[in-house]
Image 1 (tube, rainbow, N blue to C red):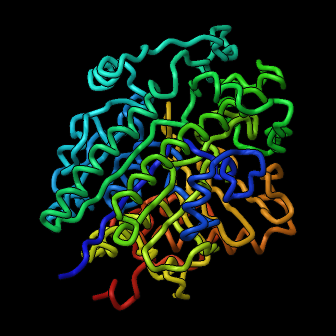
Image 2: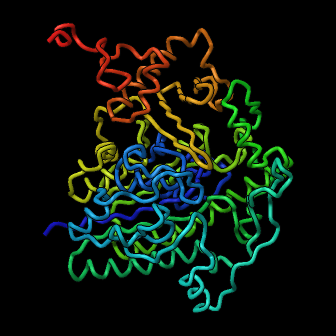
Length: 503
């Protein structure tokens, strides 16, 4: 009898890679995720397909880039985009269900408005929204059953908006013990389902997929005293890119900085925000540790693949910004990515460019299913197993807007990053000499050859995958020979051979 192949998937929200010890943070406390990385593979160039929640999560579910699945914005700020995946859309969960898997997803869903997790074959409470739904009946019942106090906050941190109004809430002190936090509640519910699935597997051999999706450390960072005060703000180094001047940058970045009230807050407040953010990361790490401990107790480590990642990163003051948005910086596009497979090399570090999107094909591949329907995804199993397959030497990401439509495309190579912004100026960064992406070198004469190469590479990648953004590039940049009618009218003779026209 073939041993079952299970999956446990941890996904956080708006989580910077540099908050983990495994990714070089010497102050942060992430012992459980660090241990997971030490027992598996850490990917140093792991990117989100788009730095916005709903499209990124829909890409993980479908194995398709956002332009293809067309869920392009969070519904809370939707400006007219599609809000649910179309009927008949492939999802890995339905493929697993069809193969006899139990499938559970505890925590944040945020993939559409009308179709909830149960529509795609997942067990788990229907938790709505973008942040901890602390008024949800299941959470309130959890508190009541345990005699725990309800949600109450103080010490709110927020700036001042350009119109003089109060800014978005960025952080607050939570007056609950850790056992009452939403994070602890999600871990408890995950452990309950893990025990149920493991028992059924012992009885019937049925494999399972179980995901724990945290709403945090998305802002506002709302945590109990122990985490709110865990790190000394005086020990926090502000991101070097707080030196951002927005010179030669798309104007929307300066506007977005004002929207997130960065300049209305003091340096001390900015340091405190980062300190609280790191505390939030520790709270989540500890809860993930509880789930991992139960998996080990149940004897699942030799039959289960473990994944950890985030839907995207967070600015936390980088480039004088908070949250995420219309700026394709490493802070929000490069995230942590950890995969642990039974029997695979431990403590491995890979430098290939990979994507959250690639988890879809990896899950299917690990579970013995065809990954081909996840058309924009590629299995990471060869990399995790220590093999040296041919791999792309760059990665393409996209953005479609948040609060307002704003199309962007990015290509990141070993050294350089190009961002195409049709409404404004393009960006080109040398990440070796300028890792903080402060100097836009797009118009610098000495970068002409690099600019040309990246424009052509991006154009080719977009056209090959069917992303119609390439049409803008056809007319605006030197992308090499064009072998089609740019007007798409079918009436342009210049794109046809003379004998075709004559015939």
